[in-house]
Length: 286
Length: 262
Image 1: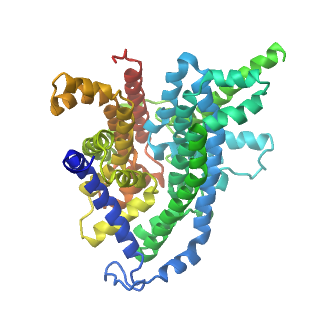
Image 2: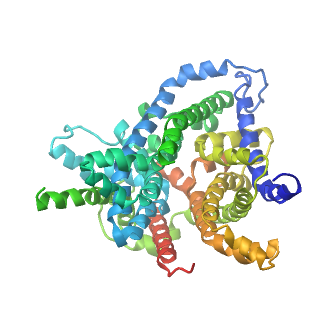
Image 3: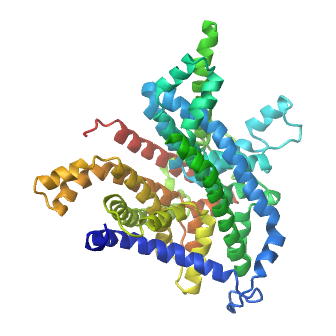
């Protein structure tokens, strides 16, 4: 249907569409433009557009460890979310019975306490004088001077914690539709529990895994709160660099270049992932 | 398999799931505990002494309540705008087939696939270049931007699950397009719209990264927490976090367990 029948559609789309174009597309273009400004300028004197593509290799040469670390930490946190999220989502969808809604509320409930306050609570839990560190030192899982806070482990654990519900909810949504008879059929055909899980449950949960992976990886790759509150300068992520370059060092061209690289890296990974996993997942469902 | 073995095989997933749930809720318990704790010094968080002093004087921390009020105002404005815009777009996407539909879906997806730090910094670059002064309204603009996509997705999911024969039946019964919308489609979509509004409100209220880039000198509650974190957050922050948690859980529980009309 085109022509006059679709005119109401365009009217309905217009306000949100304009908002997205004006405040997402235009700023993205502006960000790209900013990344090509003359690096010798400053915020007070103003920047000149010199198409300085050299800003990119310069920024990457200085900050590639932070960029790689961000993608690595985000990938580790995503895998951890999947490992922790699968049993939880499976338990809620298949085993919880009439407790299902209560457990679902418990999954989203932490969202309602501020993200920052919860991360600060992890600071308390993982602190050197906290119970957890004392316990781990007593059972010699940590050396006498071993720490949890200010380590890469703490940062990845914080990222895992903060984005776990984003993994659990889509996993739950796809497992909830799982037909119990398929599992019975698999058992009748002499598949053990492990084989049933690998050959039946997991493929059917694939759309949830794909959605959950994206919803955890993307925000985790750009996060800098966990790295700041639970880590050290040695665990700084690319978000920390962009934040300080924009708001403290006021080096706009470099900050914009790094920000744009992060956006491009995440988008490329998402598209590559969707082409591999997304298509496979959709095939198996259809 | 022995009976005990079978019982373990049946229940270990539930046990593992509950352990993960405990991990999710542990920090909330710590925050609730700290809200009734009088620490031995400002920078220590050890559980020292029980007190209700912070609960009876939540605004005793200088500047916190002002920041809280600002966050509620921003979240309210952003929720109203994002819910209206997003719902209209969701209706367009489910009701009509039109040229540019796929492009619109991509436009909705993109903000969700972009890290917050990128959106925040690009808005800062835009506002800087356009010489827009940063403040309350630039924060609202930014919040509407990231909320609107979630509203579209949530409302659209609800609408596409509806029986398409219902509006057709209304039309057969001589309801005009407006009457069909007003009396049939909108009431059916309402749970989805309310869920989207609740999601938008909590996303906006809790946002730090994008806000930090677009707020200038305006201070929201998360920015207040961030600003005081280096010196040790005042215990009243834990009171607010615990109270917000209680209110939200009660709200969600009421809407979930209320007898439902279909």
